[in-house]
Length: 289
Ligand SMILES: Nc1ncnc2c1ncn2[C@@H]1O[C@H](COP(=O)(O)OP(=O)(O)OP(=O)(O)O)[C@@H](O)[C@H]1O
Ligand SMILES: [Mg+2]
Image (cartoon, rainbow, N blue to C red; front, side, top):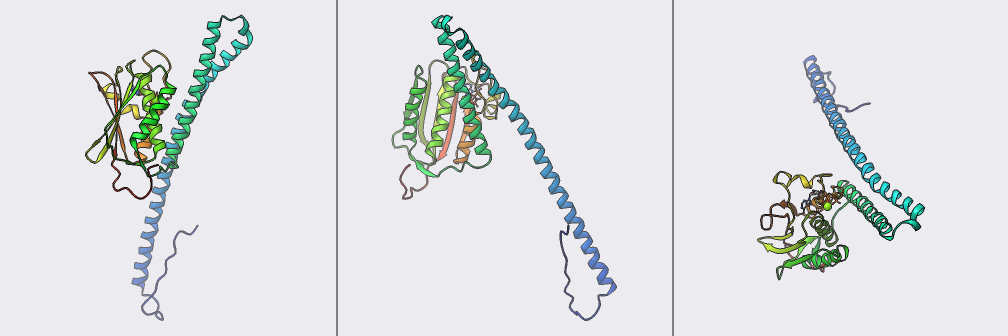
């Protein structure tokens, strides 16, 4: 179709254009047409490249998704079949094991689905985090309670500097990030448990989650934040989905903060995940949410 129309307003409308003027104008128009053509072509090939990238990502996502959904489903179906067919005849210990594996695998599935949803919300830009005044100490104390309930056998502790200033962000999202980090500390860290520190450093509030596990190799300190990056658990059990930390980074960035990993962290062992958020500049009239 028509892309552009060019009009000319001559100084002397009654006289015809001179041959020289006409040829100058038409060559100008031609050049312009070529430039427009070119830029449209470039635009289209950029779009095509982006679509291709998207397509690649979608393929990776789909294969990871189907793999990660299928594995736990197979375990659940297998366990349910055994219980239904042999339930009465099985020793109580085996029945307990089967029920436990159903519970664990169902938990994995639901975490995975929650992670996928978070991921797509971050990527579509639909997570527009709130910009409330957040009382970091209160968020940490709430997360601690949740962690104690979720990981009953594990030791989770906190150490919060007094008069910690508020940050701007979303208390729920910050809680979600911290919970993911505690989950990792317990999954990959040693039996020493997880400790959360919070203090002010210059114009930032620093929040760290540390463990005394085997740590992360120097070469992997950035990679662990990549989507789907994961390595096996020390105890040989299945690792998670590899999405937790990439979601954490997405959420922290969306709230104006930064998140990095440090290892070794404690006594030449362990991992420390460090988050920095700028101290909330000037409290507006809204209450801390
Ligand atoms: N505290 C830690 N100590 C040692 N390794 C860690 C620690 N936290 C994360 N990792 C490594 O980084 C990888 C990525 O972590 P991430 O939280 O993104 O995924 P995940 O825990 O495997 O799965 P998900 O959190 O989605 O259930 C983990 O598989 C693990 O290898
Ligand atoms: Mg994790």
